[in-house]
Amino acid sequence: MPNHPPQGEIIEGVHHLPIRVYYEDTDFSGIVYHASYLRFMERGRTEFLRACGLSHSALLDDPSPLVFAVRQMQIGFVAPARIDDALVVKTAFTAARGARLEARQEVFLRDDLLIEAEVQIACLSPAGRPKRLPKALIDRMMTFLAQK
Image 1 (cartoon, rainbow, N blue to C red):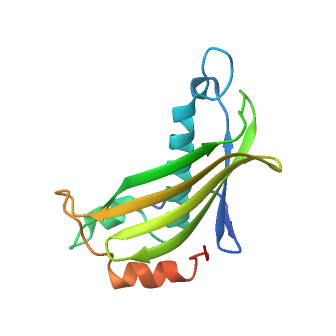
Image 2: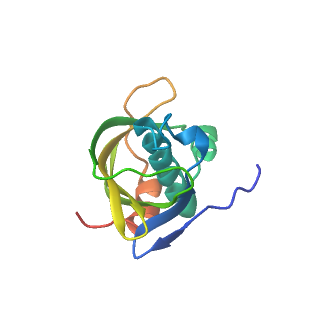
Image 3: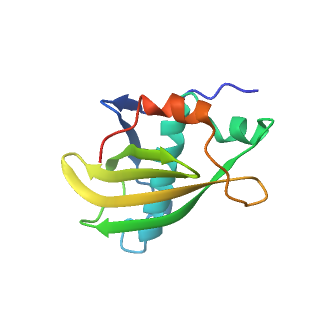
């Protein structure tokens, strides 16, 4: 299995992932297209898991495989980002129980909050059926769970 080191870093339970805004992330006016933030936040959640020693490919290859799917997301768009901006996606997992993870994510430009989101993530079998989070996964993540 290839080694994919995590990007970003965990600081006091919050993962910080630097993201550069490229032309492909923007609309015709050079402002970040709203759906691009979904990709940025997905990368933030993925890199947080990787920093915890978990990867989507390893979870799928496990004898009892599992996958994650966003079940619900509430997003507040506060201010726009523009082409070439250097953003930071901050991700904190706030709960891990049953077949669900919860996360809070924010996107910043320097000290300015641009986006805030509350995310509910379902744990599923590859066939799409709800699956309880394995105790080993919860134990590994507990060190990094932030308080709501």
